[in-house]
Image (tube, rainbow, N blue to C red):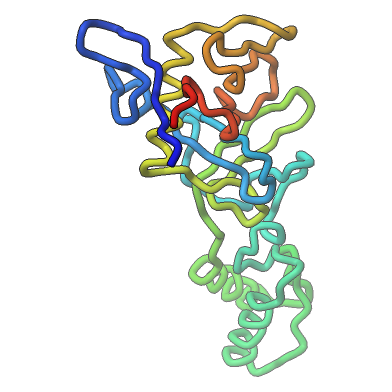
Length: 222
């Protein structure tokens, strides 16, 4: 079996920073590692953890910069035009309450409703409407707002963890220690690992990019 040996950079006489598990100062705790579930191109996105927030997915944006809305997020809502569960249940509750079935309302415009009927519908929605939630961060790409969603419904991100993450941490730590050089306008590449880069251009969706195909610091072994 082929043996893999890691080259390393010595920070002091005891610390080898690109051995998996070594993280002087806890640098990597600031980051989360993701790959795109719908795009198996061997690239991992490294994103600062504090960029993510937990909130309503209907308030995010898709990959084209269009608002997801309740339809895109699959919310149980009167504003989900691709699903009729909420409007069907509201009509049923209105029929049970007021004894009629000819309800015509959408977009929260309760046409033909009395004040009492409208008040009941609004109260029912406030109690029963449910919006899908999740971890996301929204950024400006220079033209549009776009959102990245953890475990998203649109083939977005799955988180890399465990031993796989530790190996990627080791590569990124070594790259940060070895320095970066601007090889393309606004794009900086690691001097020690040619498949780690970052960009200062507005609109990049991650802090660093790692190509998993490259085995950083590996010597041939037997």
